[in-house]
Length: 191
Image (cartoon, rainbow, N blue to C red):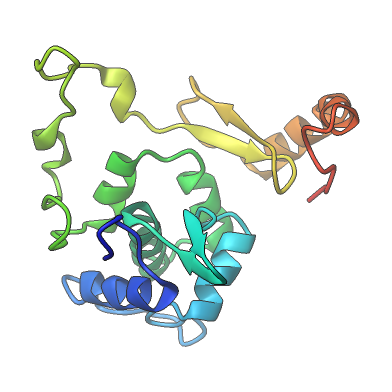
């Protein structure tokens, strides 16, 4: 990791391999790769499984620790037999704490260790130095992707919508998407 906390695609791939070297039996399906390649990571970014690169240095994309958590979580969920569509629904809007729990990342030399089952142990500090005790920081948020640039987050939902519910939400959102496109706030690419 650079002094600015960013990795190249190659460095990110190496760190994903290191993280999956612990408590990972690989993929049960022969159609799923054990480790994501650079091409796979770019595809995951395109379909919204992984955030876009954090920045660019010339033509080189740069990635952060959050990207590592997302990729490791995807591979662990795939190993458990979860489809990419279900993984997308599960990861949309996920916090770093949720990703760390799903990824079961035990450490990274450049970051504080994240321990499975103890992600709450390093609670963020409040401005006055006291620890923050806000349950809203550690909850799952579900969402429905309307276009490649617009996602509706269901902050109070206790479950992800099923396919029929997601389709109904997308249909009901058509006027909103038209307005966003008219205002220039969405490119209007429908998924």
